[in-house]
Amino acid sequence: MRVFFYGVSFISRKRLFGSFEDDIWRHFLTRLLKGLIMSKTLKKKKHWSSKVQECAVSWGNAGELSAVLEILGGAEHGEFPHLGQVLSDALVCHVGRLPGPGDVLLEVKGTPVSGLTNRDTLAVIRHFREPLRLKTVKPG
Image (tube, rainbow, N blue to C red; front, top):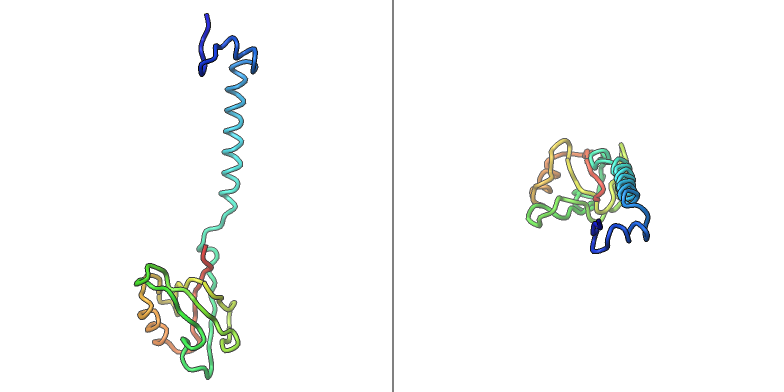
């Protein structure tokens, strides 16, 4: 009796490729190893919340913070507030690392700003005095 497998009879397939059971095991082991490799790479990635940076900044005689730190994005653009151009010469970082351009702004002195418009974010920043505690995270 001949059993057809993908249009080729089982007898001729066995002669060409080895036993049918060997093919099944080979397929099973390949899928298993791919699954193990994928699970290892997924475990290595860190959650974005572990990459949050906090810093305390002041800007001295430069006037407002918006003169030395550009705030872009906002809810009206469908984006989180993020930092644009940063004049690192005019900013003094007391604690932590100075945020860079493109960093997403999460909090200003404990007040969450994610989801606010650009105008509201700037109002929150103007409300507080120096030094400002900023929580940021690199995008991606």
